[in-house]
Length: 115
Length: 111
Image (tube, rainbow over all chains, first blue to last red):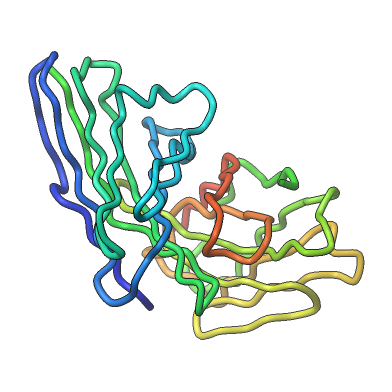
């Protein structure tokens, strides 16, 4: 199947700093990518839909000014957690939909810890 | 999106066949049923997708009755490495929309 990568795999940052997470589709072009967040022992929650060349669409309750999403190319979307706080510590997962195979491929996830 | 209901957890033993059932009473005509597997600290992995009757691939089978209000994921001869959380999702065929995950089923395989 198709491959989606994320970088970094884990990051620790101090409260108040910003962190950028990259999501890449390695062998297919993705006009749409998705960002999810998963807290310990909970399910994945969709945060936003990243559209290439246009603004992201955020789910209800997700602050767009805190979670900045940029989808500059057909293979790269970035999520920046601005002014991170300990409550933002979570597992962030991206995915990309392959419209040819109708499958959605997930990245390996990024573990963010804010101290 | 149709809501899904799955058992919170299941236990089985190596070499057994495991069947996980998912209820989706409000499934729409255009909806497909998709199952994902997730290991701790990893992204979900696609297992199988179907619309009706039976679908089989190299890792699992998916049984869907005629009314499509439920589905059963069948894992043949499980091993310890099949211990994971399994999610049943219902929605239009994947790719274009974000997915709504339920609580999933935590499958624990014992020796």
